[in-house]
Length: 87
Image 1 (cartoon, rainbow, N blue to C red):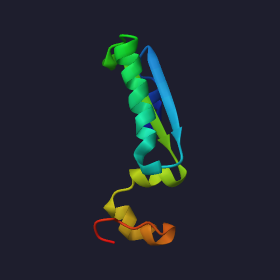
Image 2 (image 1 turned 135 degrees about the horizontal axis):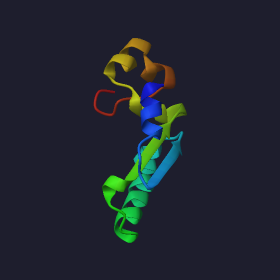
Image 3 (image 1 turned 180 degrees about the vertical axis):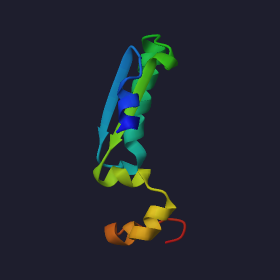
Image 4 (image 1 turned 45 degrees about the horizontal axis):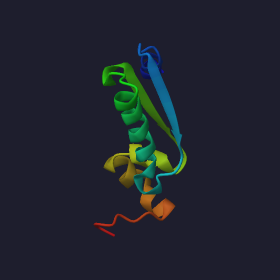
C-alpha cells in the first residue's frame, strides 16, 4: 500500500492509467507509446512531467511474474502457455 500511496502522490501535470487485461502480442504497449509520444512531441510536455501507469490484471498480469513464480505455481501449464524458445 505504501508503494501505491507514493505513486499516486507523485506530482506531475499529466497522469494517465492504462487498464490492461490482454497481452495481445504486446499491442497494448503501442497505445502507451503513442500516448507518451503524443503528449511529449505533439503537445510539447516534457517527459519528466508525464507519469503513465499500466494497471495489468487478468492474463496481462503474467508479464509481472518472474521465473520463480512461473516455476513455483506452474503458471504456463495451468494457462497452457508455451515458451517459444523452450516449448
